[in-house]
Image (cartoon, rainbow, N blue to C red):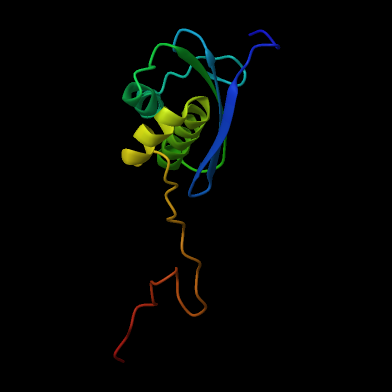
Length: 129
């Protein structure tokens, strides 16, 4: 990877996952920051959805840096990051991606634990006697 190469950068979040994505001209590879190719089939499919929508699947290499969260939230955050980076490339892409709801951050977060309860809403078992 050439240091002077132009790339498009965006951040995506979901639950407690944060993903930073870089898009640069290439052959359609999806890599981690260390340079390893991502092999998780579900993650690759999710990241390629925005690219397929704008018909640019094999034109951009994607470098992904992730932090926190589980597998599901990681996939959602990665999809959002790639979609945001595509929106920076071309305003027409932004319209298409927005129409398919790819630029909307999922606002659902874990609800906080309340005092006197076991979890956010789970009350201790009630005993009649």
